[in-house]
Image (cartoon, rainbow, N blue to C red; front, side):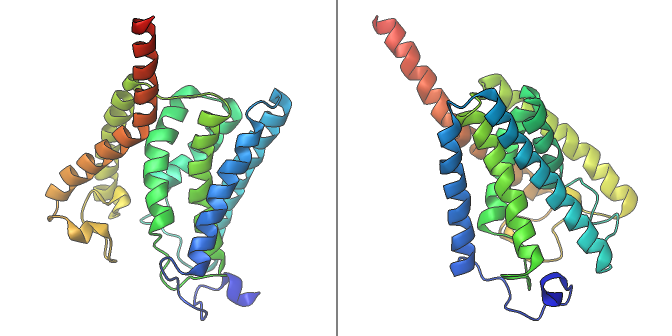
Length: 244
């Protein structure tokens, strides 16, 4: 049990797409498939599901902060809830319990885009299965994705073209604010002030600040891909109406 929480983990390091990684990705997929069964459920049942996911998100995030504090790694330069997925843990859980549509727009477009990348290429370093950090990472990012998909498939929410504009606008405003926070406290939240010290996908892009433009372009492509099913549905509906 001591190795489960230790900061100096001596077990196997995380390996991309090893059996443990593939198993947890499969678990996330199966969870989303399972939740589809509740599409026609009564509000009391769906209320319980939403609250369960919200509580798990909040408890998991509290545990993440507590663990970092316990192993001496909690600092304002790294642990403030300013990274995209950190913000979406808190507001995504709030979306689940309040059914707030404005939060949903961000959870669907930004949440799925960011958390899916973290699920596929997590920055876990030495913390492989079965360390606490392994479980915490996949629970957090898995439920960010699941919360947005659940609100779409079960609760009937959906983004619009205006959602893309609103999310893009406010995401950029937030990025500017975080940029100045980073300069004030010496942090690098959102990686907008420079490349991180550890290897990342940004190493494949041009130097700062040009890579921010690439990040914007990648984000736009992700938004459009996530909106594509709804665009196709709307096009088919309009075509059917025109035909009639």
